[in-house]
Length: 336
Image 1: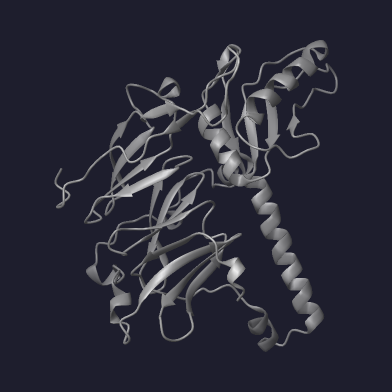
Image 2: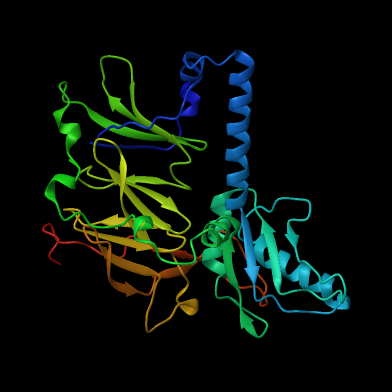
């Protein structure tokens, strides 16, 4: 594996598992010809590219409905607002559909960014932004498709977040400590692939586990290495155990930062939501969770400061904000 493919790395003590993506060697051993192998890889790349593109498109609702004469001004204003938050994909980066009969806009716009991370940032900053009479609602196209694909009625068999009541059902989160050579592990991300390797200073690296699009932005270990956290537009997922199963999910849209308590009993997530756009009675900028039950314990307003990176701006432009992190300090025993 080329060293250039290894980018963001994070070290910890953890465990490996199965479900490694199918490689060319696995395809060949399954009896596939070279042409079939190439076509299979091409289809995989196309599917991954399409999914990544959906995460980079922001669907904006509650856009003012205007006549054809005001269409160009509306589109230019939206372009200026969203351009400040990331590189847009040209041409037609901002699309505002019109009713074919009346030529009026229909209250929806689509903003295409170059990268999913920029789209996530736009959703966090522009969701709830006052534009016209009503605040805008912003979600990625991938999130809207996910919600649209949910079953209309609750089904018990679809509920995957049940807390195990039988101790034998709880995976061994310290399985990595049984390694006969006493090795630690580290995690790497390259493009859309996340991989975990055994750390061995003597012999060559050994792949423990890897998946394509395991995360939508970042990965982070818990302090004791019991969990690997993955970041997604809809929240945080924790993985662990010998088979790298998904153990918990914490629904908090557009999370940018997380912080575990020292003993991994609690998790703090932050979306960096501007307090001016948050609900003071039920804030969601920062949320404290109990890890074992995925229970939300309390919400706080995010602590933000005006970003100086974007440089000077006119009075009409909305200032950009960055979140301060971390904002809490845990006691050593997780009690305070």
